[in-house]
Length: 144
Image 1: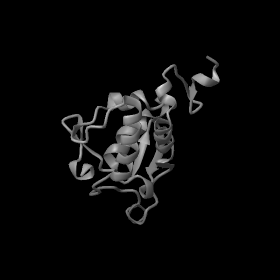
Image 2: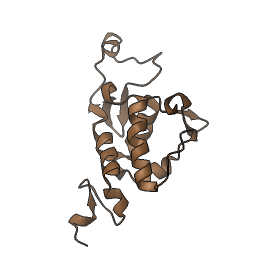
Image 3: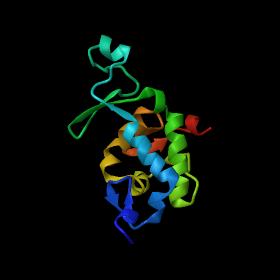
């Protein structure tokens, strides 16, 4: 197998052909554009000078020294769930169980390693999951 055939998204070498499936590649692309560079510039954040006290969901994140903000227009919980379900099905050949805990380790199997740091912040900030005692629980209202 050539080096080109082993690459997915030009970032990591793989032997697993499932990582080259369109829904998996699309999910990785989605993760790349889910955040913009710098602090959030929505009207609330500008007025409060970046103080997110009282916000239900976080707007600005420090991902290993890189400050980014969530792109609200494309990262609603339902949007995140839709692309995640497609990638999950494509990779695992099973439907994503939309109730209970989300197994982040399984998601990381089909996400490029440099994008792992974006998963939990996106899932939490979009409202797709809630952290319950260290477990990411899918929110049933999104699954309906």
